[in-house]
Length: 290
Image (cartoon, rainbow, N blue to C red):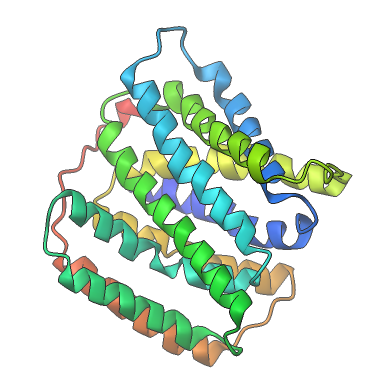
């Protein structure tokens, strides 16, 4: 199926991002890194823009990019200051629940069971943890939940505002919205004295900006237009085991497989229950609009 190609390629691209950020960019100001990533992705897509007046779809794309990428990165990058790569991956497990929760809020459905499932998913993440929860872990967890909410909200918004437009011709606006947020965040919270970036860090930022942010988010959002909300929720969880596998294989990461299995079963059970009760929306499979 076409949508699997888009989502799986995005997942593979993103699976390297967590470990690269954790191992290569720890000394780089997070807001500077966010701004560089958004700027590189925006420049990459500028050649695809068709000269035209700014339309509502362009404004909507900027709004989605500001939330799904810009604001999400502000939470996400700061989480690396408090928790490990594997913890960040595991705490991302709540994204599918938030996605369905936000979608249900928009459609004004009963939310009681959804809220229960969110709590259950948090319990599953707790079981997976391999150390005592301290203040740093709590802060990191909350930051990742902020990132998850922004990412989930952006996915839902993208599905609502982008319908039958040539997505590649408008996608630079998506990154422009993210760039504006990152610019404001850097101006207000960034460290102007921390501007030193090594060659390795620059190469990492180029990969994260053009490949992970640029190509990755384009493929993901295009793929999200070809699936139902529940299928998209499932796809969000593909990144977690792949990312952990990459971290263990290439960066000598360690993980308690027993706790991972037990916690994952709890979390996946809550996701399965939510998916079973979610009504599938109408899906437009007309790939000429990509």
